[in-house]
Image (cartoon, rainbow, N blue to C red):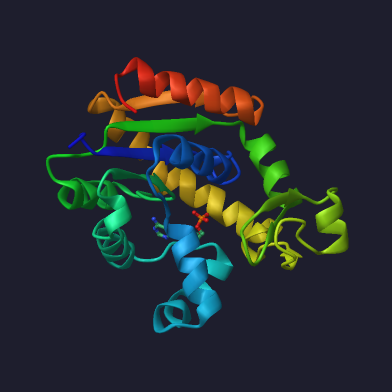
Length: 219
Ligand code: AMP
């Protein structure tokens, strides 16, 4: 059996991780594992997990390492993750990165992609971002779907995420700098880090990532 392809994508909120992850997961036939999506789905379903985390998500704070580590471990036990997975939004702290090494064992992270985008650009992207509550499609506030409030993909409601409001954006970017940026050094020290300019067009970014993956004989 082919070795598992475990990829991590890092970058500030609004760097384009969601968009790139969907493309890469399809290109490499591995699941897109977004802890943010898993947690938002739980909030929407009002499950016990969702009720526990809803106020944390709304304020832009971080859920505990223990909780997300367990979610990721469970997700890797699902059959579609037998060939690996693309992690988006996890790990977010050094503690989570260490836990991930334990979860993946010998077939660890093969590459960590750092989507580098200046803070002004991500702030602008986040404040204009609108999302479909049903299918997760991403729009900008000037798109017809955002203006009409209806998704052209599935007919769902297009809204602004509570954590894309200015206060929550600031809090999330501060948390990224404090808790997540140290992960760049963590993966660099393991020879696994590649930095890609995330301010380019989505197609150019995808091309640069796919080149980095194939340059390492992965994918
Ligand atoms: P995201 O869509 O990745 O920005 O995640 C949305 C929210 O979910 C975050 O602001 C956190 O509240 C929570 N969350 C997602 N992933 C993690 C994680 N790895 N550790 C802690 N909290 C997380």
